[in-house]
Structures are given as structure tokens and as C-alpha cells.
Amino acid sequence: MSANATGVELALRRAIAFASRQRLFAPGDRVLVGMGSDSASLGLLGLLTHARASLGLGQIAVAAVERRLDEESDDAEQVADLGRLARQLGLTFHAVRPAAKGRRVRVLDELRRLATEQGHTRIALAPTRDDDAARVLWELLRGRGMTSIRGLAPRVSGGVVRPLLALERSEAASLAALLGVELPASPPELPDPTRDRLLPALEATILPRLRALTPGSSAALAGLGRESRRIQRTFARDADALVKASSPAPAADQLELDAGTLLGPRGPWVARAALRAVCPAADPSHLRHDARALARAVLHPRDLARAEALVLHGATATLDARSGRVLLRRRALRGG
Image (cartoon, one colour):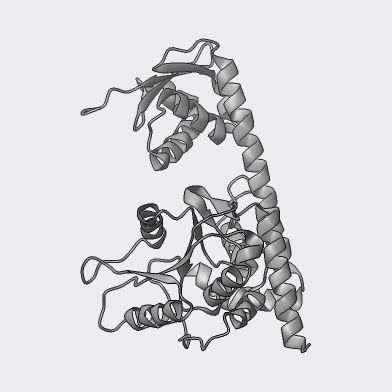
């Protein structure tokens, strides 16, 4: 067995073990593979087609997204190449295109919509441990503390899984050899103008230098992301328990809290849990924004006490300066 074949086999074993340990797939899962033209995406497809029986997968389909409808973009040609590859492998292929010229596609939203329409239970994406490390480093450099670092989780909502997070990018790319067919050429990836400029710079230049100077740095950064997510899950559980215990029999549209519980590292989680209890149908993005606003307001109690109420998307918050209690009330909104 050649050294290269040995490397592919080791990467395959590690990826299968990671997917099994993290319970990324359930028996019979119908998997939609979100594909780009990069080598890691081809490696992901190699992994899933080769280890289909080992992972107990059902149907595998491929989806490629043309992010921009633009004559100067190579997206359409790359999508066509991936379509030919999918058909060569006997797989169902879906191409997602922008609705109009100049419009961009929200890739994950489109993949979720397509998976729902086609009855797929998992969406597999190709980020690697290098991508995870770059994300953690980006979050650190943006001044985020341990309670805000996320990195890339193996599983997220909507059935999205990332089976290659146990592998470095070069290892993930090596799995493309398992496809056993001629692969489409991968042109150099152009910068995405919608992304923060720091992140691609970290991925392309800083992280490779860091790995050369400190072997194992990618694994260490990825581990930091995992530990941060563990802390955040603990905070979320504690916050839910505290909110339930704070008002034994709260009214359906209001809840009272000790202002002190909204301070400190757990404050944003307590605020979010309280707002979710009062406004169960709140938009998640509004919930995050309102939780931060509420925690900030309690840090400056004089400002909050002077105002009649802090007006949020779905609730109002008032502070009783004497008792140090915050009262949340659901706000009547037009049309709802």
C-alpha cells in the first residue's frame, strides 16, 4: 500500500469515527451534500459515497449553488461541472440559481429549503478543522470572550452536519480519490465581498504560518471552540432553570426577575430565557438583540429607571429601583 493510499485510509477511518461519535447520521438518512468546487467538498462527497454502508445512509443527492447570476462569474460553469460529476456517480443533482441578475443566494437557506422539498433529513457541508480554527481565531481577534466564541459545531439546526471537522483541509481533500472518477478542475476561489475581510485572510495566510510555527495550533483552536460551546450550553441550562424558579406562577404575558441575575457572564442567557418565556413566538434574531439590550440596560439602572420602559421587539422591561426587580411584559403588536 502506497503512502498516499495509507493517508487516505487513515483520513477515511477518522472521518467515519468522528461522524459515528458525534451521531451526525441516523440509519436511513437521506443526505443532501452541499457542494462547492473546492477540494474539501469533493472529499466530502468521496467520504459519503464510499462510507455509505458504514454510516447507514439512504439516498445521497448533490446540490450546487450558483451564488451570482453574472456573466463575469465562473459559478455557472462550476455548477455544470459538478452536475456532470454527480450524474457520473449515479446521484441526483440539484442546481440552485439566483432569481435575477445581481441577486445573491443565501446558500444555507436555499439548501434547507431544497432539503425540505425533497425530503432529505441531513444537509452535509464540507468545513474542516482548519476552517473551524480560522473561525475561532477570527472571533478572538474581534474581541469576543469565551461566552461568545462559537467556532463551527458538528451539528446545527435544520439537520446540517459537518463530517470533516476532524480532518485538516489537506486530509479532507485526499478523500476525493475515493470517488474513482475524473474530477472537475478547481479554479482558485475568488474572495466573497459579503464576508468579513479578516476571515479569508486568516484562512489563506495567518493560519498556515501559525501551523508551521506551532504544530497542532489548528486542533488547539478548534478545542477552544468546543470548550466555549460547552460553557454556553451550561449557561443556557442554568438560565432556563433560574427563569422557571424565579416566578413560580407567572402570568402568560409577564415575568418578574431579580435584576442581579441579568448581570455577569450568564446575564445574556438569563435575559434570552426570560424573553423566550414571555414571547415564545419571538424571532430568534430579535431575541438575541433584545437579550443584549436588556442586559446592557440593567448595567445602567438609572437610565432604565428614568425611562417608562425599555421597549423591545416583543416586550417591555421596567425596573423597580427599590426592590431591584425587573418586570417583563409582552407587548401588544399590530397584526398579532
